[in-house]
Amino acid sequence: MTTLSLKNLNKQYGNHTVFEFEHWEVKQGIYLIKGSNGAGKTTLFKIIAGQAPFKGEVSIDNITLNNNPLAYRSLISYAEAEPQYPAFLTGNDLLDYHLSIRKADRKTVDGLIEEFKMGDYMKNKIAGYSSGMLKKLSLICAFTGHVKLYILDELMITMDQAAIEVLYTLIKTHLQEGKIFLISSHQEPDASKISLSGVFEIEHQQLKLC
Image 1 (cartoon, rainbow, N blue to C red):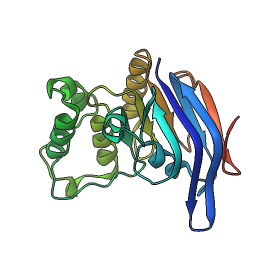
Image 2: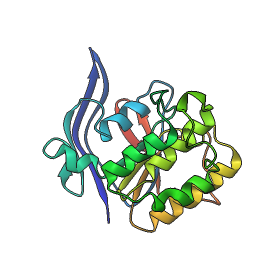
Image 3: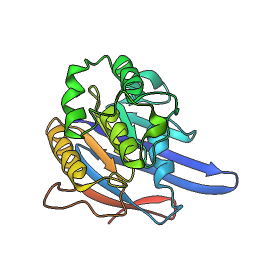
């Protein structure tokens, strides 16, 4: 069973402390991270994804970001709330990059492309993508290869209902494989589709169980 652990975490922007706590740990499951605007949800996700500096230790199954960053990052997929990619790339270009670093076969994601109804657009440059198409592309890339932790920031933003249903199915399938999902959303996930393992709120630099 996969375990994500944060120890002695401290994150500051200048004199402003965003996070300061001793220990936070979650195992296989789906966890909703809540907090007011500016509370630090995206900052937390970027710390865990290895995209923001911090003090402390972050590990997945005892593989630490500090000591083994390449191995650690290979265990994570991070789909940002509003993904931004170089406009001159095509969807296929971006996907090929993820396939390469994840050492995955294109056939393993062809089904995803069709399920998200992106087959007619993967050859097009990202400059012409709508916000919904960008979100779908980011999710296709996030579910490429085999990882242990999925971070989905504002997972339903700009998504149509059909795409949300596809996402729910993906989450349920990968959850059965022992994975962890950290999600944020201004819209509560449909409890009839996915069952949350825990809800945490960012308050006073802490992650508190709701």
